[in-house]
Structures are given as C-alpha cells and as structure tokens.
Image 1 (cartoon, rainbow over the protein chains, first blue to last red):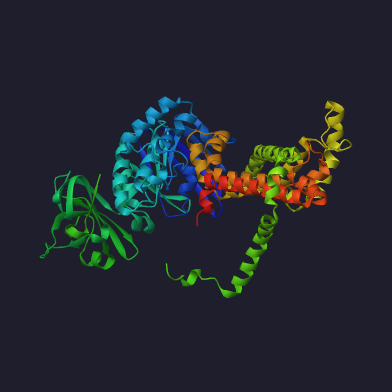
Image 2: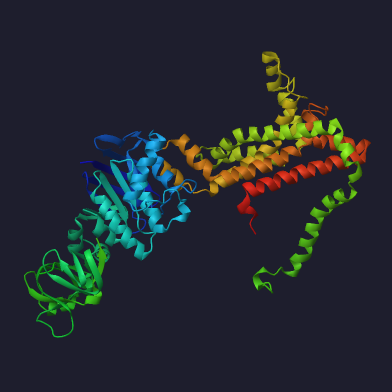
Length: 348
Length: 268
C-alpha cells in the first residue's frame, strides 16, 4: 500500500473519521456533499492541517503520527486546487518549474523539465504567458503539470474540475483521466460530482458528515447504493464504447443509439430514472430496447433501484408500486427501454 | 457621454461640502505658488545652506524608509499572519506613533536613547556612541514617526492577499521563508510600494520628533522642514522658496512612483 491514512479530527461541528488505503497507481475518489469533510481530509494529507489524531504513511515514510508531523513542504506530494491558483506574478513556465526550483533543481534543467510537461498537457508555447492570459481549462492543465512535474508519491486533487464550465470540464476530465492512467503514485480525488468519481476513480469512498457511508468500485456504489443519499448522488451507468456517429458500439458488443454525433472512445452515461422497465416487449419509438434480467433490487423511499444484467448492464429506478405490479424480483426477465435523447455521451 | 447617469450624479447636500473641502486643501498650495518670489528663486536656491538641507532631507528620509522596510515588512507579516497571543496588543502598540504627537515621540526617544537614557547610557558606556543631535538621530526620529504608515499599509495588503497561494507553495516544497520571499512578498509588492511612498513622504516632512530628538544643526540635523520654520522667522521669502522646493520634490516623487508602481490605484 502506498498511502495508508487514518484520521480522526474535529473542525467546528464536523467530526471526521476516515481510514483509507490507496495503492500505487490507484485513484481513490472521496465523494460527498459540501461540508462532508473531504477537503479537510486532503488538507491533513497535504500537511496543511494537523489532525487531532491520525497516522499518515506514504511509501513507508511516516508523514503524521502521534506527536510527529512532517511539514507540508517536506512531503513528496502534488496538489491541484479547485481554482488553479497559479502564482499571478510568475509566468506559466515558472509556475510549473516552481516545485523543481524549491527542491534544488538548477534553473536551466527546471525550465527544460517544465517545458516538457507543458507540452504533455497541451500548453506548448504558452510558457511565457502570465496566468491571467490563460483560459480556465488551460490554467487547470498548467496547475496539473505543476503538481505532477516533481514526480510526487501522492497526488491530491481537490475539486479539480468544479470551477470549469460544462464544456471545458468534459475535455479537461478526459485529459485528467489520461494523465492519471500514466501516474505511478497514489491519487486521492475530492469531488462532489459523481461523474468525476465514476469517470476517474478506481475506487470510491462516499463521505457524509465526516463518516464513511460506502466504499466500493464506481460500479458497485452505483448499483448497490447503501443510503438514499448515495442513491440520489450516483447510480449513473457508465458504458465504455466507441462512437460511430449517432451510435455507440459498446466494448461489450451491444450498441446504444444516441442523439448527438459521437466519435472515438467515449462513455455513454445513462441515469437510473431514464430507464423504463416493461414486462412485455413494448410498441413505440424507443430506440434502445434490451432484454434484461433483474439481479438485485434495493428499495429507497418510494422507489426501488433495480440492478439489471443482460446485453447492457444497467441500473433502473422504478416506483415501489410498479415494482410490485410488475412482479419484479431478482431473476425476473424484463425489457428495458432508454430514449436516445436520455443518453449522455462524453469522451474518455 | 452627453449626460451623467443617475447613479453617478452627486447629490446636492454632498456637492457643497465636497467643493469646500477640495478648495480648503488646494487653496493653501495655490497661495504658496502665487506668493513665491520667482525672481529670487535662483539666488535662494544657490544658497549652499538650502542645498545642504535638501540633501540631508532626501538622504535621511530615504534611509528612514529603508530601515522601515527592513523592520516594518516582517512586523507587518507577524501582525497579519501569526497566530500568537498578544497580537492585537502588539498592533495597538505599534500604531501608537501614528496618533502620538511627534514632539512627544521626540521626548520619548530622547529618554530612551539620550546619554542618560536607558539604552543610550549603555551605548555611551559600552561603545562610546552618542545618538542625540546627530544625523543618526534624524533618521531614527523619522523612522519612529513614519514606519507605522508602512506597517499598516503592508499588513492590509497581506490580509487582502489570498493566503491559499502560500498553501500551494508549501505543497510545492517551499518552506516558510522561501514562500515569503518567492510568493508572499511579490504578491503584496504594490502594497509595499504604496506603504514605502507614504512612509517616505511622512519622513520627508517630519518636524516635531526631529527637532526634539536631533536638534536643529545646519549640515547634520537641519532638514528642510526645520529650515523652513527657521527661515520663516528671519526671511519669509526664503521660507516660501524652501517650501516650494519641498512641495516640488514631494509631488515629483509621488507622480514618478504612481506611474511606475501604483498605476492601478490611479486608474479612473
């Protein structure tokens, strides 16, 4: 295990108790509403906040333990904040080179390394600009390069996409995914957006009021939410495939009709409330119709979340009344319909 | 634009006092310029005593500003960032020279640094150093009066600066000192520059503490304000000339620095 952290700390009304282990090259998402303690936790990992009690070990080195705390600047980490927070008085290249210089690298070498990273994040030739001259997406890419350039053991991403507009978020998310795939250290991603967690993380920890309410892979958390909160928050079915115009050919073989043109590797995302279940094959215009088997059912308030398996693995929310009327139970065969316009597509 | 928008029109009850206020501030300066014996300007300025006083004023105000920067910027950081107890008491104490009549400040300096003073007698015994009535005393008096302007200005800039940049620097391996030098200080540079200008202008005009603690000796402690005061009693025309010179130097400095560093605050 590359990161082992056990933190118990109070901040105002919040009592945060969290134990996590993150392996090398693994991405752990901390998902939860504002005030759940996510940012407090990453600030503890970064050494910007001392925990009341806690132990943080990274690559066998103790960063926090009873009475001993390594200061932030002596931890081998990179951190990306919600606002890119590029130093306004330095050029973009000097921002990226900053961490190399503080760690003793010579100026020429630091500049060359920074230039290489700017190219990797698609900011070739923008190194001499001031941060104020970059767009939001460019600034966040530069911030990512600045965090990764020192080859840290631990990468902390604190709401890295939430300050971006919807369109930019898609492209930066796809790039972030690519860079995380090539990163050898451990990553902790803090987000309140389930899509970020689903698209970027290997494992998700759902945090509510400082407590862990669920841990699992994104698919597990979406399929078997343990609380109403998790059910509302997640439940998105993310289907990897390849865009072929108005059609996404899934890696599993099936095809999903979509409303807008899609090209190359994409995710087709379907929300549980968009899936309609039928006992018999329905007539009508629904373009996506699949034969499915109910493999699990969890009631949440007035709805029941059904886990479906078949041509396309799906999650569907149906009202408790229809659930009973249709005689649904694990093992039941159903037809699942999704309108093409209800399928979201984005690059992966 | 042909008409002022409703929101920018000045309400009548404010207009009259505002105009009176502006007149009150501008008229004395105009009066000084009107009464200036321009024909005598050249001869008065050629007087070596004037040059000496001007040089002493510029040198001592600049040294006082430098000393204020070296001591005042760290002090401002402590006031703005430190979590230590007694910080608010310290801030109150540091700003006392702002409200203290300068003459009283001069007396206080004399009691501490004079030959019989707590620190002064020790300096005299141990090193044979005497401070009062020297150019050093001028610089000390000016620093005492002017440094709080710098401290207040820099502390405000530090409080307004986004402290998250310091967190970022820490995650990038910068210790507290590196962070201060490479991130905090550049971020508050405009505030430091503004504070230094205020400090310099205040030091240049210093009178009360200087005459009390350093005396009025031409060549060593007689700065321009002291020369103006003395001249007014003998030769009012000379006093006016000296005043105009002081005014010109202050304005020139202010305009020069405003263009270079304070451009944003000067934008309409």
